[in-house]
Image (tube, rainbow, N blue to C red; front, side):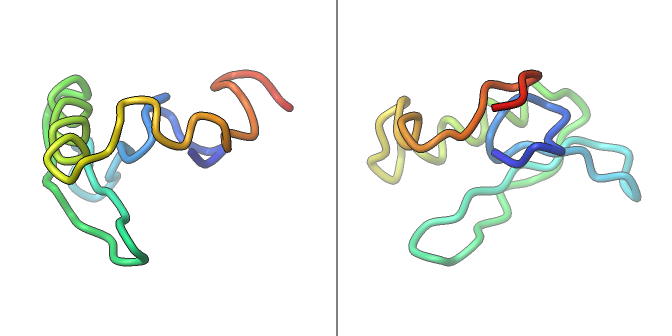
Amino acid sequence: MRRTNLSGVTGVDWHGKLGKWRARCTISGKTHHIGVFAEMADAEQAVVSFRAKHGFDPGHGAELAHYVHGQAG
């Protein structure tokens, strides 16, 4: 997750032009645009479902996180 991420959810960010939450996920170097949502929780669920469909464990990548949201590290 990028330090500039406002959602606290990897793969979910605010799309300013659309005024909605954007959900996307990168697998094998290819970014998959999942959709845009009025509610952040809906975007988060879309990303979680997409990852599960593609065989990723919910904790996938956690050991590589450089910081906890809201805390420098």
